Length: 84
Image (tube, rainbow, N blue to C red; front, side, top):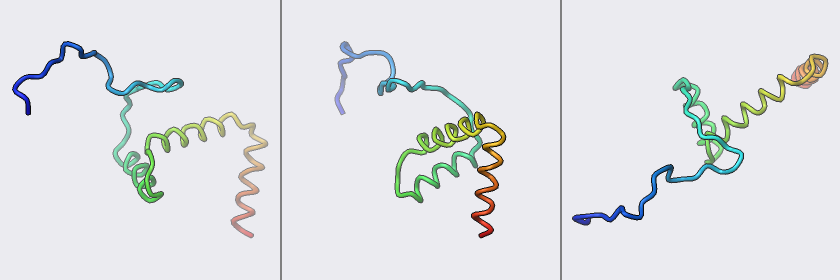
């Protein structure tokens, strides 16, 4: 280690910039939820658990916008496929 470091050219702010279309937020998630997403990523052989959470939220939002008739038809098809 050096005795002294020169921070005269240092900049304040985040070390990693946030990509366009993304917003950095702080939320509190239950430990078991985070563990599940991290385990899923590990089982898949790697990746980013935050991306997986984002995909799950995106899927939830898209299904909430789905009309009731379409939702019922999708659920019935899924159940018929499981039973067949």
